Length: 390
Image (tube, rainbow, N blue to C red; front, side, top):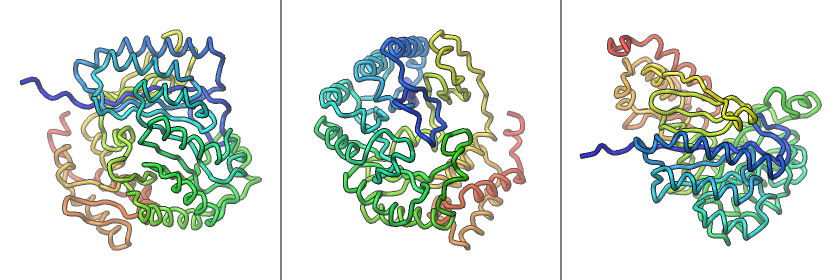
């Protein structure tokens, strides 16, 4: 009997944007003309063709077009790339196929219908705030009214799986401001919500203006976060990762691949891959990618590094980590890690489950510290002989 093929996620990076947002550190560029975008589409098509050998070993259960702002790339180019994937790769009939978009680039019902007919079945919409003043301060090119209209048009176009992104901790934002944003956005009834705390990335316009702005302090951001977890739970959105909430059956399959150490292949400048026990990233160089000159260096990942990743990523999820999975991955004694989590339990930051441990919402607020302590405990635990010899 032929062995069951492992699941694989595909990520296509579309680096074009209408304009650069004040907080963004992703690899993105101002949208070029039709010729530049056609050239990039052709380069992605070549890369997909070169990698189609993956098809013999995997089945694709997730395809994600991220950016940048993929919706600025145009429905024709997006549909063409998705068609190339569906023709060359074994894509599951129920695969999650996501397009990231900005509200102002989803105003043509014909384009939306074309995307749905091409096979896209999920849209991740960058809303960020329900306050137009905050949107302008972030450099966002849309209003909240445009976001609400985009949701309506997507529903009319047949999309039944929508995710909306929000950011808290913005300059001058009060708890009441954030609560209004969450309430107005949840009223649009998306299947998924991502709520991220603002992170000031060095080199961004917001970073350069930081001394002239007043941001919510740590206590206020904590209040925003804990209120969000409670309120979204009341509205039927289960928290499944630090920043992500979904109605039953709608967690992001793409995101879960990162957090559960599943395999994924990335295409485009700045895209990351983790396939076949190796990891690599393509340089952030659009022109070199279009010329076919990007040759990433692959990094082999050993079992101990994978075990560290399991702790690092697993403790970010609501499911947490399990003793059985820790052992299956060749882990040493679980006792030192469990001792750390027991201390966290006593402080209200972790809970013991039948299978293992997970952090509480309060624990998620200090997760970096907890994860650091867990990794330190792993370093002092006895190493199995088979892991030493790998």
